Length: 461
Ligand SMILES: C=C(O[C@@H]1C=C(C(=O)O)C=C[C@H]1O)C(=O)O
Ligand SMILES: [Mg+2]
Figure 1 (cartoon, rainbow, N blue to C red):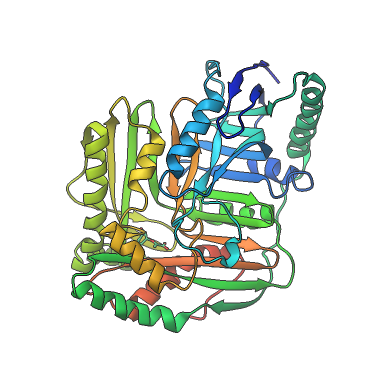
Figure 2: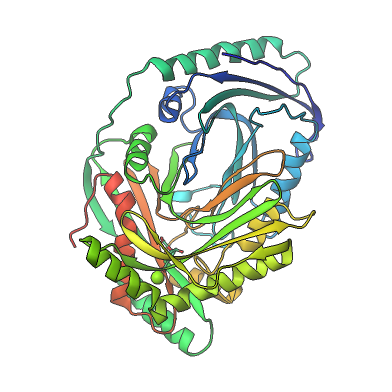
């Protein structure tokens, strides 16, 4: 264990309205398994943990316990409120060279105007936390930070207790055998509102033909039941092992675990540069290399899928045009191949204007036509009317920001919400004028596969 530092900053946080001190101490540790660190918090911090890994596997983040929570149920200004509170909380933090910063992790729900409870209960429309114990693995270095946000004058004793707790957690994560978790034992699964879903595709295509909207993404849910209660490390272990080419995430709040493996970046900001990705248009993987290539080629030339894709590129490019000094969009999509599916993919990048921030980009980008539709407002109204569920965090922005303005949000698809011995899996697809119910239905079956497999289920296809 190497460097140590302790920092006190006095801040006044708007909603709390009291003077808070933010104490931080970061140490470098020998490399450890991020999942083992997550699992070390099973007793004490269950319900207050998160896990995140980027697609490139160059950045892994684990949080145990809540040092500070930023949440709200606002609608239009929820992004601004989170941004303001985070700025206030971190405004006096002094950056230490090469050390990880305190990170705020969480997500914004897909649609604050959907009032169905479903599995989401009272889940807030914005839910973010700074962890009490934050593990960051960047390239080959691992750091553990303690965060304490308090209004108490004298916190030395409390901080000392946290140091001991940190050392226990690190020890547990380092000495524990790398555990092989069993696959959950699925008792049953149910395709929820399957008929309603199939009908809705017909209804939505006819709305589109009447020019009420151009594209609308319609999703559905699958309910799985298990004979035993699942644990978050168990679920995450299978997601991590089986989907290495995606963003991997897990977010606990009380009894709920929201998790998944998404191929889709909403936005990343690094040193004033912004990156987004247009991912829309899908086809399955082939059984052989030849078939796979053939399917990929037909996707690249398919008018319906190119149509679905083009709406996304146009909208993301427009948003970059407004927020960037300059930006680049390739002319034609490429293929993004992941384990179960191939997509049309167009990366977008740009140099942000001085006043553009990652949360402002999230606010303007969400939902892109990859998960909402065109025009946005009409599409959201159609989704609210035809989907028999609340998406919660499915298809929503999930990710992190630091105090320097850097961060990354994925679009939380290929995801599921688990509570006790039930899990709800989500999948959808972009509906355009020439969509057909059966092929859209089949596309959702392919999109369910990653989480279904991680949870020990199999579809009878
Ligand atoms: C809606 C989902 O995925 C989105 C829809 C796609 C499509 O319709 O082709 C492709 C990728 C995603 O933008 C999902 O995975 O649930
Ligand atoms: Mg599609």
